[in-house]
Length: 200
Image 1 (cartoon, helix red, strand yellow):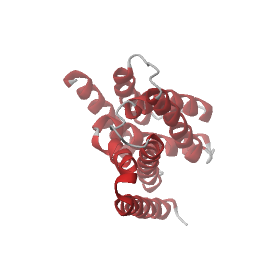
Image 2 (cartoon, one colour):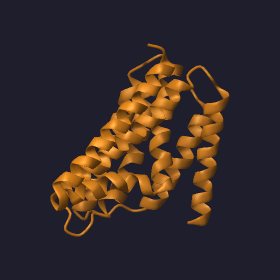
Image 3 (cartoon, one colour):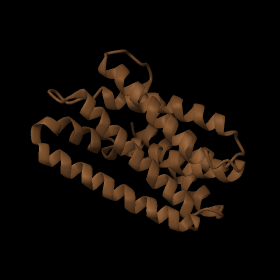
Image 4 (cartoon, helix red, strand yellow):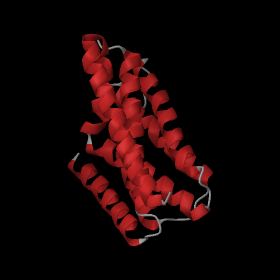
């Protein structure tokens, strides 16, 4: 299957998964309120949205430029894993300084990386994704709604994160081989991050 077809297949699959998750949360009512809140939370903040889509887009760039297809899943997996760690640290009331700065910084840095498309090792991509993820996870975990079940809330925001990574991966695969459009997209993401920093 061509890369572009894989991209569209990923988008369709992810939409189906999120729709099924939302329906399940609705079916179980109050007991799944935490899951619903977690599922929606990453979609409500532009900074989170941009960073998580950028991770998927950047992963496709790394895979293409290094010739290592494993980057397609290693980088997003590192982000989701360490986001869970960051979320748990907030739920357990561990303090993390400069959370908002780290989040905005991740948007700017990821955007610049996509725009510049440097030939970095996949390991560097994994480390950067992991560091950025801790800040995003801590922010999500720190906003656990009163009365919500923490495990379901965490599951919700981790699934939403994976969904957004999938969108970035799909976009990257659809645009694979092109240089200008992804780089312009990266520049736009970085500019949005600067704007968010200034406005924040």
